[in-house]
Length: 286
Image 1: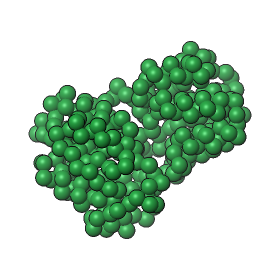
Image 2 (image 1 turned 60 degrees about the horizontal axis):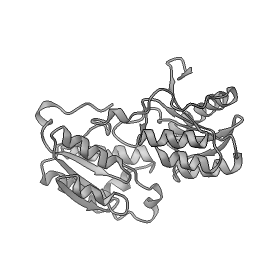
Image 3 (image 1 turned 90 degrees about the vertical axis):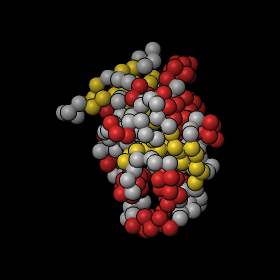
């Protein structure tokens, strides 16, 4: 996990590189409660326009405009920043409009996968004097808890599917492909790739029907500075559409949004939501 701010920057402006969803808004509010002004960069067609009212300074950019981000941060004295929120991954094929700094970096990246891209951007920012912190720095209460969160008990066959899917999900994560697999009866029905979790659930659920089990994990060596797995009510709604039965998420290593609403939706749909932990010897517990 990335270190917390050091004393000489604890009250300085903090940078926010915002994607979509509510996470950037939650971060901005939490940072301001800690006494830090927020200097944000928001992405066109991704970030919530409400962010404009939650931060002190805001600059809108398109994907790939790295030079513009650096210039904005330097203008307002940002020495620490976080990545928060999602970017629709398929946009890299049609909506990227890099400036010179972004294009130079893009051409240096051999494997254009999530971690490789984000690590390269983070490294460039740090070279420019902007240290990248963990996205959970002020929001650790959003980390997914351990244990069964719903009243519906998990069956023996569902436990076997979780154990089976866990190994598969670890492997696709190691390859930086995705963070989620969809299984039933110890059969892989869908593997998350660039389309994202919800699309993978729909694809796998249409094949499996009732009884679908979804496992979502962090990638091995996941950098807490960006791209943590996240779940919320939308995940449950999607799983309910395909009559899914279980959502198993790695506890303490992913984000949970709108916990009460999510659990209520899961209870109504008859879905078991469970936070799972892997021990040092590879055993699963909850």
